[in-house]
Picture 1 (cartoon, rainbow, N blue to C red):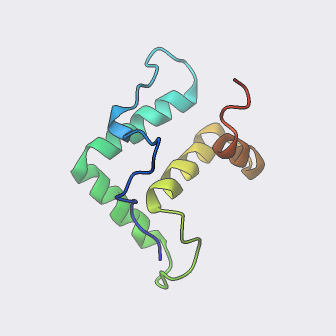
Picture 2: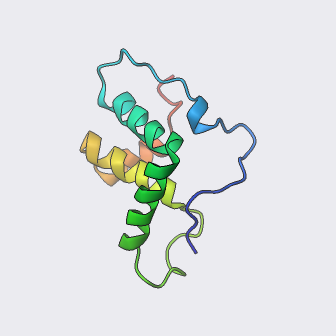
Length: 101
């Protein structure tokens, strides 16, 4: 069963509306993050986006990964399309963000 969002934050998580994103960056990822942050902090827009995503999910909602919320699907799908990357690079971006540091 897919959830829209997980209402319970995990230890160490930061609220999306409180994220500080570099507005002067010319890279495409910070621009994407700012647009996703705008969707998150606008409840009416967020409800419409989630409604559209739920329409794309097959009618049997008991399939798929139980840990993948609709918000994560939106974020990773948008990141893959904006960066024009393959799934291997997307997995690396999702799982190893601190390797470069």
